[in-house]
Image 1 (cartoon, one colour):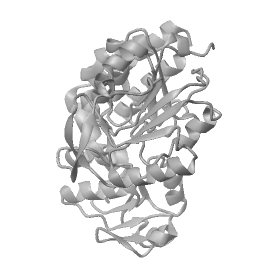
Image 2 (image 1 turned 120 degrees about the vertical axis):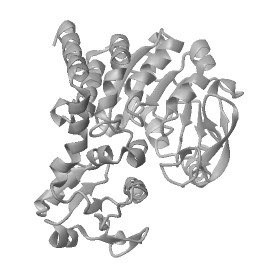
Image 3 (image 1 turned 180 degrees about the horizontal axis):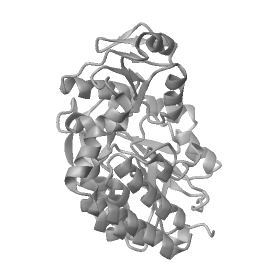
Image 4 (image 1 turned 90 degrees about the vertical axis):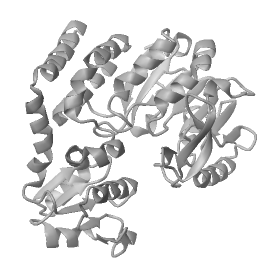
Length: 393
């Protein structure tokens, strides 16, 4: 599609957002879950008892709604309880509740699970995003998908992001995401990419043999094997930042098992806009994050203020919504050294356009790309790549 037609498509989408009466969009978002749940809006079974399912359970209980049960494909969880809620085998749950409950799929890549439940005869099956629209006070921050009526206020920011994106694939992703988030229109979404390439798009990036990789939110070192593989073990050093003590224990063992004793440094820092102690929810899972009511205090550092023994050349950020603050804290690095930056955009709706816009306001010479490696909006990444690191296409 020619560039002008793409721009016309964006303006058509934004025009529809801005022209829909507030009462109409509020009515639509409040009725979205009912279209999936029918008469079972208050009788819920959560399919997926992992970290997301447990967060949704906690949010629903805050709203005064207790699910009937969990169901999960992991046999080791069957006939146990999570927070006092039983975990049932899917076939049993379907037999007992196929017509009398709504099965909410609390899995990030949930299309196969939704199909599974429908094949088992479950009448009402819903994605967790539309459930969050019913309970935004307790679920919006967990899900990271904003209520549709709030999107029109961001129209100018979306236009600015569209303007600075470097290729049609990125612009198509931006427009499709806006449509999906506003209308829950799955047909508007481009196909997602192979997760193997997450954070390391070698079709865009030229690797360096002396790469200095900074992994912010390293968790348990889950992406380090991917980095090593993509770079064919030719790199100089890895700095893995992980503030959660439980995750960090695993991370340190992983770096040792990968034979990185001399080429990896584990740092106990959160990253942000200021050097300070911050409240942190230490869960030993991927949901660990800076929060106002955390279980521990951890040291938060500005990336630009760390005394790096080697200058970072490639920075990845997956830090549960703290990406904008970390980008501001990395200002000096971005301006002086222009490392590649791979920053997640999916923890909050507005990060999809605000993360590229923020980086551009600090270092306008970068080239900006949006890519997604999972269904719906999950595993979305903004790549900011300087000219000298950009692979010819």
